[in-house]
Length: 168
Image 1 (cartoon, one colour):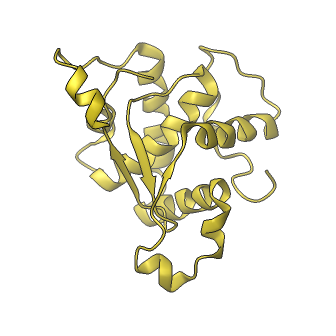
Image 2 (image 1 turned 180 degrees about the horizontal axis):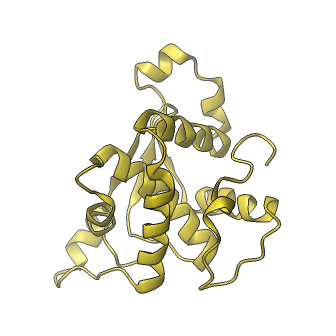
């Protein structure tokens, strides 16, 4: 498990032109890419998702109690990946980014695909996304793109959204 706290990642992603909600969505995507590219989580925390693309990231209580020292900072490859993702997804409006994330969530959690639009609007169906399913989804995206990535290689930005929907 990573020792970097979600707050460090969220603070890194949050900018004057962004929002905490956008930062959480990009952090969700970054966690998946980090696990696929480097084999480890970017941050320590649990990710809870709704089928409409809303994300909530929580630091486990056990981790907060164990770490009495200063919070570890991001390593250079992780910061480089976050910089690239922030720039790449900045071109989308918050609504477009949320729709993209909702598609990714429904592909990882097929049960969400059967939830009606009304249920989504009411916030039904909050689930924790496991690290295994998140990593598997982003590994599938790499495989579908025909890219063989080995750490610390970071893919080109255009590769990030290859086949984001049902062909995987």
